[in-house]
Image (tube, rainbow, N blue to C red; front, side, top):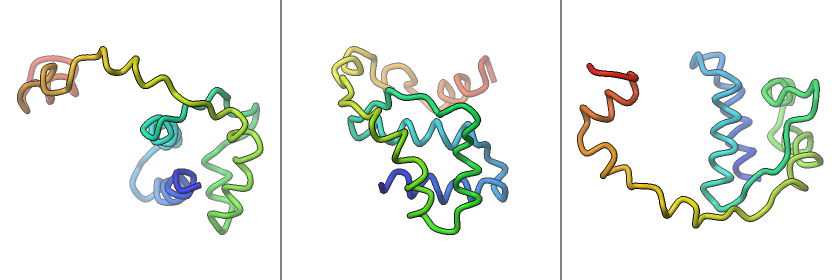
Length: 107
């Protein structure tokens, strides 16, 4: 529920921060993955997660809208697949290489 609570506040703050609903949903999925939970479910057709948050006055009401379709799709994530990936330190040894990756090319 805490992840959905954070998402509620993101969706309500995003018009002020020029954020997008897609970024908010990506972060929501990433937060679940960070705690070892994979979401094996898609957002239902004609259901907009961001508008559910914007139109609900409380986090509890927002969470109540998402739980019925989102929570049954939660499964334990296979975290071993990430152990074979190179570390961030190896891939981007300095700030310049990080900025180059973010800019998709040379600075």
